[in-house]
Length: 298
Image 1 (cartoon, rainbow, N blue to C red):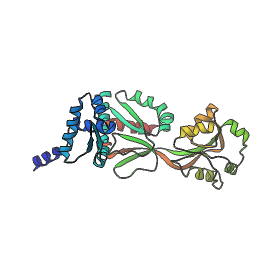
Image 2: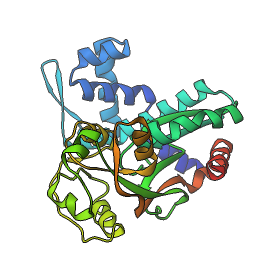
Image 3: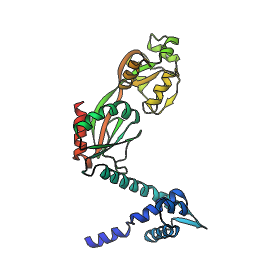
Image 4: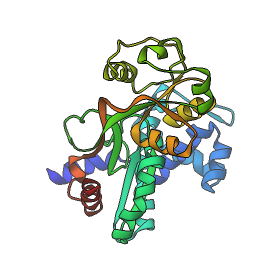
């Protein structure tokens, strides 16, 4: 029975060469360009695609002269194929970067990576010379089933089933403006901000309401730009486009540099925290275990 199951499974497991040919043709919409990328002849690429269709028992492309036009089946199938090829590529890169297996692949929020984790990461690498860390920036949550990451750092609340979490720090926010903006708009009370443009972040819909409440004031509905990254918000505030509400680790650095000034009570708590999350299946890997222990000591 096991032998039969193995044979049946292999029947629906195309070769890597076949899948890479399919991926290249679909991306380029051209056998010629796919052949150039793979360093194969056009006829070889066409045969590989045809053999994949035979193996699946499904037509994937409409053939018009020398063009292969993907149908709906091909487009849906390619989403999974591309994800699998990406996982294999990342796994191979990790082996090449560190053949002893001491590699940690981490997805991190862009600004958090450059302004909080980056300045501290050298300490971890110095203490663990056998570990390599690969960083990729992500704004949303990571799909560990479909992406080859050992862990991720994100903002929000604890993850759901199948993952574990470690809280890194709670969110504390400081409202900031440029010195020129402060000179033009004296701010004595929290209510004074209601008539000014309030810069907002997509992932922090309640931040301004929490900040006003922490200042002992009713939330204000000031109009302002909506952004998806704190780095953009910082530049907008420096340019005098409004009031930025920044995490304390970012606000402190900008205030010390003189590029921004704090408004009213600084570093007030708001909803949400920064978390390290990882899948249960990666819980005991040595690089991740060492990284968790280091983060816990900060």
